Image (cartoon, rainbow, N blue to C red; front, side, top):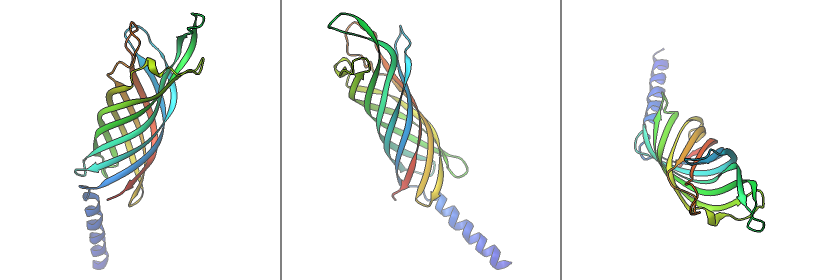
Length: 206
């Protein structure tokens, strides 16, 4: 009986130390996600467009509760049911717009729950336009958009341990742009908005 109690106490002590030793840890993450995005202005509402995102992240822990997370994401954004002007005949045609970005969020990450399995992150993001096309003529319309985007990103997620160094995670993430992405004089300003559902894996590096 005494041996059983001693073994239980030792096991509890080891597990407690392991869960407390978070300062200085570094996690590398990879994810894939489903995007729902659109743009907004003061005059019109636009239909949402769907797409994918692929990302990688580094998460440095300052304590068991807080870390700094930097992500690099290939982000498919855009909107549906707009129009494009054909310069050859002067007519407007219905089209969707597909914008591909490299997005870099830099976020404070708060870990909570009994085992710190939940997390809430928030911070700025920086977006760099890689390509822009319309679906009616499959034409390159990148010159009509600003190449840089800036806004706020936030998300909430949960991590499920697979092993000591590997965790599965699922999260909901949102982005709201502050930058006018429209580069055509005389047209209303446009700001990006995007919501995503992501799944991925975290690997403990240190």
